[in-house]
Amino acid sequence: MPQRKDIPLAQITEPPGGAPGEPACEYPGCREAGRFRAPRSRDRLGEYHQFCLEHVRAYNAAWDYFRGMSQGEIERFRAEAVFGHRPTWPFGALRSGKAPWEAAGETSGPSPLRRPTSERERRALATLDLPAGVGLQEVKARYKQLVKRFHPDANGGAVEAEERFKVITEAYSYLMGCGYA
Image 1 (tube, rainbow, N blue to C red):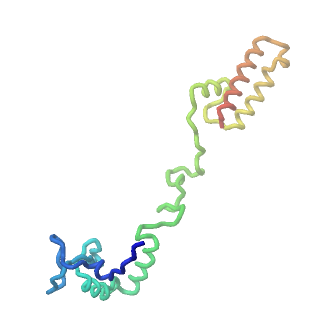
Image 2 (image 1 turned 30 degrees about the vertical axis):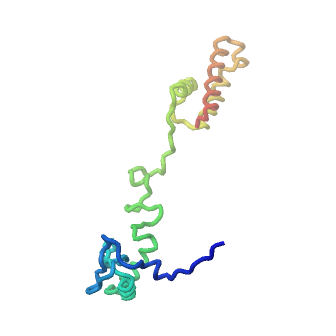
Image 3 (image 1 turned 90 degrees about the vertical axis):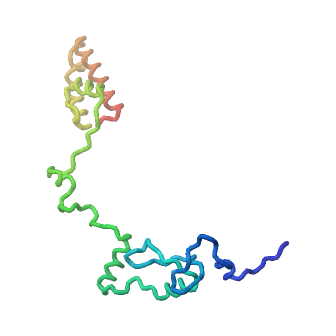
């Protein structure tokens, strides 16, 4: 089994000599390769100085992001940093202070969701003499009224009433089967 060689950290981070095309250290009078980046200023964090290891350590030791800021500015920065310096607002509130449905001019509360009706659903509702968009309770109540009126036992076995009863029952069954209301 081969033995592990201990290589000094300096040899790993700074190989001797700079590679061609590497930037030079920006510290005045330094001839080393500028392999390490350091931000230019608080206002230009995306732009960097290029320094050698010795000078980037010195630059970073002297770097103070908050230099020149008042205590109030530092506290505001700290509070905004919690949310990544993005705008925030109270949960569930609009700038007008109204609920979304009130902001649109509707003050009675959120409108119930109306699902689109198919042609067959519209025909079934028309059979029960109901408009589109009625709820489950209205469908059930109307069905009970029509069953009492057109049931064969209530009409002495009249063929027309029996046929109408079948159509009403089919329409009601379809509406309940497709999850109406």
